[in-house]
Length: 357
Image (cartoon, rainbow, N blue to C red; front, side, top):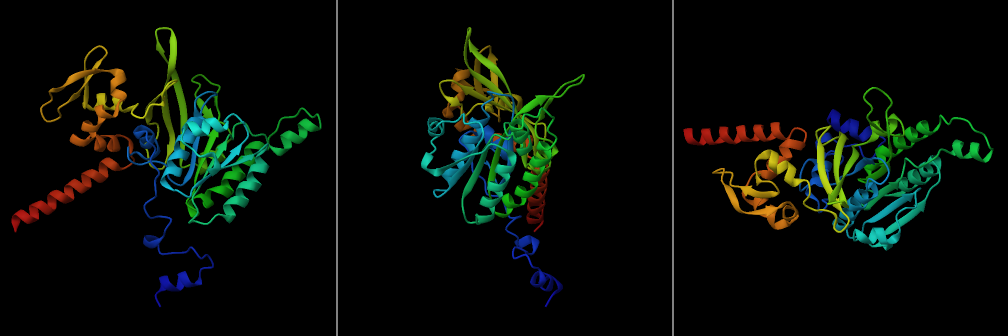
């Protein structure tokens, strides 16, 4: 018996396995949304998507954080016919019709109301402990930012007006307990959170809840926005997903997304900005856009208005006939450019060896 086999046999933990055979380090399963740039923000790949682990969606009020969470949850349900959503709710701002807007069958949603951090911790850990890896469950917490601690609630009941120093500690403990389960059970957890402006000479948005969330999260998004107007009428918002932390995407990346009142999250929004930067699309005159023939540099007619660049038919030939997907991956995904360069060098080396033979 080899020393490796001996160590494995002696381990009291049944999941112990040689690293190259471990299920925890095999290629992560991803659930793609129907918005390529959301997939890019999650995984660095327009065909990627949501994987297991903690994803934090943070921003001020009315920044469509729940919309992004339900978009991802709907993608997970589409991928797994038997999947369910475990929805912890402290805000009660998402009626049944809101879920249905994203194509979510509400009979596949277990709604659990929560009032404090400790209540969430006890219920969530209990649920995770009883879930098996083969079970398909996605967890949404809406929201962490609105949760009080048990002490804060008790102080209010006792009519004590004192500062609560226990909340950040309770949240840190919550995520310290939960994080290992997410990988071991292969579960995505989407946590909605608030941001506040840090006081100082150069104030910046900071995710509330202390350092525990930062330590535990696989992805942290901070959402920013500006109004979209037609004349004086507000028709929607242009959002920027600021990737604050990621296991897969280069940190501090900025991913543009558009949400309109009529169409919701525009499926092909965000692609135009990146394609313009990369030279895959040109703007020959104000308000007009056209594709670029990458082999000749010539503009491909016809020209279209900006609203027409949100249609799939504008993007199909760009993804099909150019290396735009590779450009996106190399721009956003950690290590992709180096990996592709290494792969190209290995391919060239093989061709040289074949030529010598």
